[in-house]
Length: 84
Image (cartoon, rainbow, N blue to C red; front, side, top):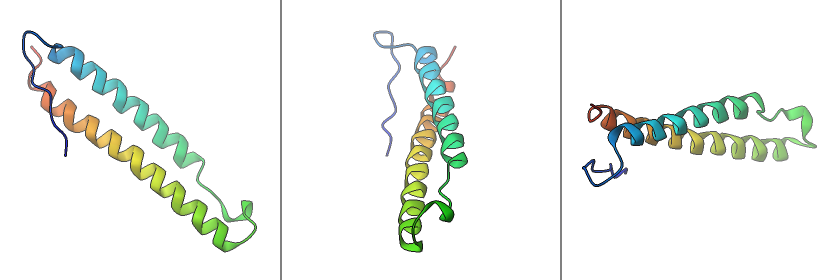
């Protein structure tokens, strides 16, 4: 669950908060692309068991980065409504 920031005159502007989340989204997207390009291949492991472990670890890492991207997207959508 994401707690969305409360935009007010004493805090960081909605525009700045949105810009920060857009930077996070772009970085996460690039990382997902790079991780996808480096997906393990069975020929690089001694046996199927090692390959399956490596593949599952890789899928888990992509999923974690996807969660970061989705969180930044959620924050961005809420903040976009508050930008002047």
